[in-house]
Image 1 (cartoon, rainbow, N blue to C red):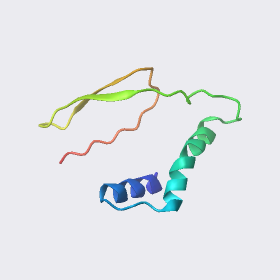
Image 2: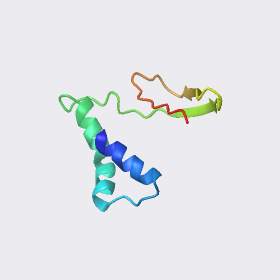
Image 3: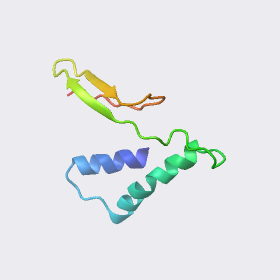
Length: 81
């Protein structure tokens, strides 16, 4: 997660990511799969859900989001400016 954060921060600063970081991002789905497929047998959790930001309240920084499927686990990040 630290590496993902570092990559994101560099991208937000307008820096170009390295080829090593690009390769890491391309293979990250495999890391996630190995984390949820304990015996390499299941595909549970690999389905894609669409999550959309419907409205962001500029005063409070709160957001309203909707998803197309059931969501069992979500990591969110809210930063007030």
